[in-house]
Image 1 (cartoon, rainbow, N blue to C red):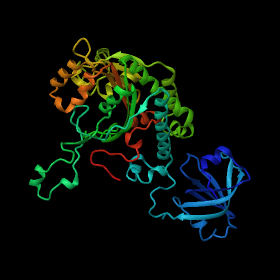
Image 2: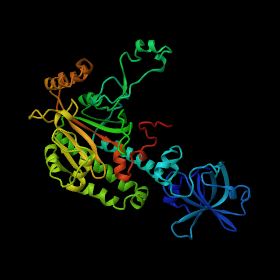
Image 3: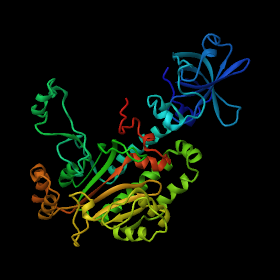
Image 4: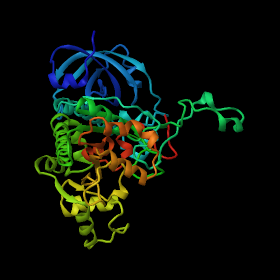
Amino acid sequence: MQYNRISDILAKEPLQQKIEVRGWLRTRRDTREFSFLEINDGSCLANLQVIASSSLENYSEVVLKLHTGCSLRIMGTLQESPAKGQAVELHAEKIEVYGWADPETYPLQKKRHSFEFLRSIAHLRPRTNSLGAIARIRSSLSYAVHQFFREQGFFLVHTPIITTIDCEGAGEMFKIIAQSNIMKDKADAVTDPEFFGKPANLTVSGQLQAEVYAMALGKVYTFGPAFRAENSNTSRHLAEFWMVEPEMAFCDLAENMALAESFLKYLVRHVLENDRADMNLFATFIDKNLYTKLEKVIESPFSRISYTEAVTILQKASRNFEFPVQWGTDLQAEHERYLCEQIFAQPVFVTDYPKNIKPFYMRLNDDGQTVAAMDLLLPGIGEIIGGSQREERYDVLVSRMQELRLNLAEYSWYLDLRSFGTVPHSGFGLGFERFLQFVTAMNNIREVIPFPRTPGSALY
């Protein structure tokens, strides 16, 4: 018999039909004549209640010995439930155990566990309500990312994870060393040839390679992992995270921001329309104003201010910031959140940053001091999207790279894009985990990625 997923059972309610479920036991409660079993198979937040009668042939030897975490196969008939809070229940006719879970050592019990504790057992935490819901929401939004860009006429490009250049120019990269090239004698290791012929690193962004394909296909995007060797242990940073990065030919900064706003609203609308059952958990226990916050994102146009205007607002603020605000320095999370939470009370685009705090590839404005950059700030998060119009002028790009003492030879292929049919083009990157934080109201970014990689921690 093909088994049924609990999400399908609860959606279709095939009453009086014989069905089979397979899942993990959440709780067992006994009476004189039968036991109540709560089964979850991961397909949805809800459990299925199973009625196990004492007349079952293995009731004493098996059913009464079941504990939280046991994996089960249950066959029976679906009936209407007389109990409040559930429409149906399964009356078991046969119960088999796939795997036992020792109650003395199984760490997940019928109680609320802290997220810090669950992080220490990342191999088991998806079985909890909250982390299971996050996993399903993450999967749903991943699908929505691809759906949005397909509807907009974009092509997916798989950009490399291994690279020999630094996209951001910050130098915070993880170097790759092939084990076969590590000699026993450390002195020899210094002169050992590189596996790729030159130093290689894990990518911090797929942007530069995506630009190559934007210059051929018009509109492309990449969605994959990125890596930053930034020694930061905050609730907003990961060493490995996922980025959504579209690149568009024949596109200026205004069009770039319009796409970013449409994209963000599309994702929020998707999660509200398709993931309510899981979202209700976070709207009930994490942030009671969550739905109001998300609906406001959809309903209101995003604000737009320049970096210079933002600095002026922050300098006039009555609040004392931990980091002083002055023109020419990057905005910190406290500044970003103040702008979008206290001043505008909605998402805000900040544009035209000083060139000295932005990467080399951003288009230089006519003032010679700022670049055509944009950051999108979200309440509760801060920066969620960073992007720009790219510098399409060969001479200006070369001059900018020379200012930053970049090796032009290493970027020769990138410069070729400006020599052979250059066009105005733009793009941005959305931090997928930060967006998941926003829609679930989770405080720590480590909760919204399956296996967090942070300084000092790379378990699993």
